Image (cartoon, rainbow, N blue to C red; front, side, top):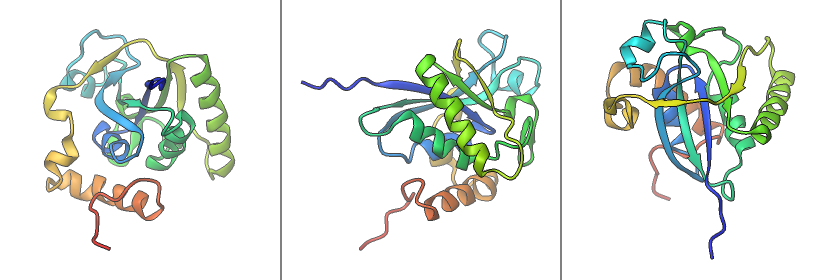
Length: 183
């Protein structure tokens, strides 16, 4: 009998296309959905969130098997997959919708997130500005945002922003290689 409990994490580290591409490559991650959370507008569209008036951040909602990957490990990857020291921006993407945010689903996640942030801060040269807040509601982004990198890896944004991020994380052995090479 399988007694594994599936859990959910909701994390925002700038563009959700970038974070989705990273988390999809982790063993133990079952699914990743790009969307919006942390704001006040119900059922926002991508264009509304990009306008910066909804209060929402671009986030990824990650369903994972804690027997295969822990929430703490997801957060270790989170700190390496974006720059948590830049307020309301990642690279050229600027606005509160690109803020660094951890939305915890329960008190256990809150404690793990706070501990993880302290550990990451001890390694960082600048102050980490990541918001840690309670999860309330997640709104999936439109279908064309889901699996974006895998469907559009030849697009300029993917080539200039996402591919180098994945290559860096692969080199550091944080994520699985995107292309398996024959042995």
